[in-house]
View 1 (cartoon, rainbow, N blue to C red):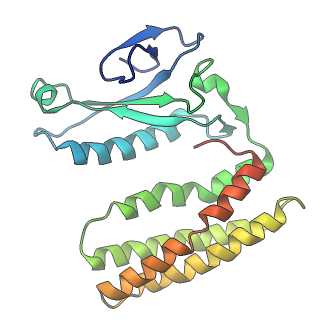
View 2: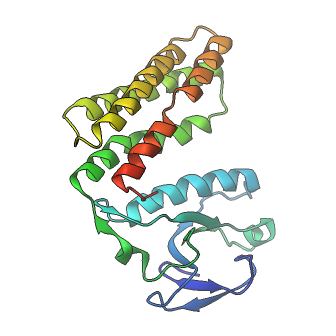
View 3: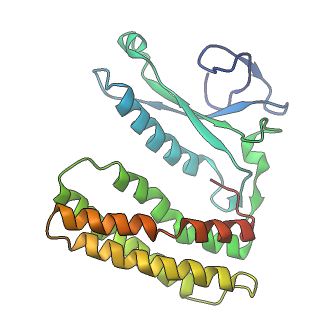
Length: 230
């Protein structure tokens, strides 16, 4: 499949077979990017999983209109097995599918312009949403993770600044206040992680961060804003 191909499933497993259809018709999936990999040797399934997750998430941000809200989309990706790799099939194929079951028209036509507060939310969280998965994927020495925690501390500091820089609408402000309170606690955790003197101190700070990340409070904000974009 190539970019902008749309398809319906003929089996539960899209790696087995699909039927190509017009994107204006009901379809199960849409290919939005194909990424050529430069590695000569087969990197292994775990590494391809990591690369697919990161590369397809980044490609999605480039593909979608930056100022539009979209219905929920699931990102899937296909990559070659070892046998295909030896045959020089070295593409990651990024695919949108809908948790609702079907997509009714080309994905780009499903967007609606952000409201002012949706745009403000999107700008606030974009750096955290991009960088936190990279932090989670780090497998280096504790000192490297502590250093990266310093970068996350700066991102959360900026989030708090953005969230409190001006009032929100009356219906949103209490939800924002609850979220900011958790973000300020998370900011302390990242600060402690960045200042950790050993691996134990780092892990203790990160355990606190996992409790203070404010995901529940953020979800309430997203729901109130009707923000459905991934």
